[in-house]
Length: 296
Image (cartoon, rainbow, N blue to C red):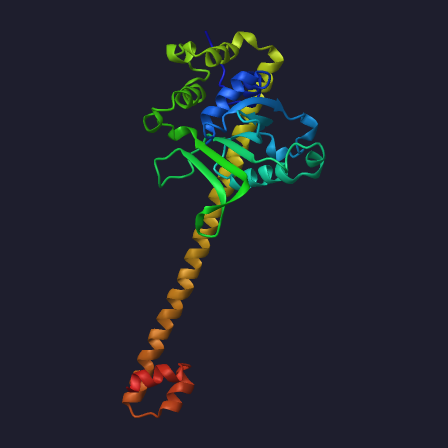
């Protein structure tokens, strides 16, 4: 049996786009929700309310959720394939939170908004943690929270089940996202044994996709590859430009320092030969402080 990668736009939407129970299972597993905040039901945000912006083509779903106590919250899910994503994520979540058109139909702007971002690149190299939850806080006081926007970033390449062994569903869903792709020949039994994940695996079987869907799948990966190449190229050019400017600046400073040292040597010799300080100052171009230091 051959499978497709669940992280592509087409496959992710097929798996979760029309399966509320499955999406609820994923959200409750990955979002930092308390027991009382666990999502009980969801309503998919109408596509006409999703902001149109080509740079957000990996924004996979926008959902209005109801928790076990009847409270509302909104979630935007995004699959990101580059290290240069943080500003785009903030802008997308904020746009959904304040968009006037959405506000008129009572979706966003009155409920907390959670931004769930599944990142295919490592972007925090200074920590082994692969799950990062952020909220907006007042100044340096992390206890004074400005409610409204919540951000969760999961670095899929760093996924390690050991620290989250007590959250079985988080482990299973992240294994589902990281262990299955076109090279997968056999699915682990513990993934198949979970009702929702088992059904999601079935929908990844390549035999269930039309030729048009497979072409769209390949086109998605082509676009990902092109974007990553362009971003890496810009990043490399930025490094090279910075390095060249640094070398040039270093040479200029080095030459300046060398010339200054030479001027100091000349001034010292002139003073030793009995020339007055004002004449030495005029000839060498040194400052009076530098001349005084030589005299002292």
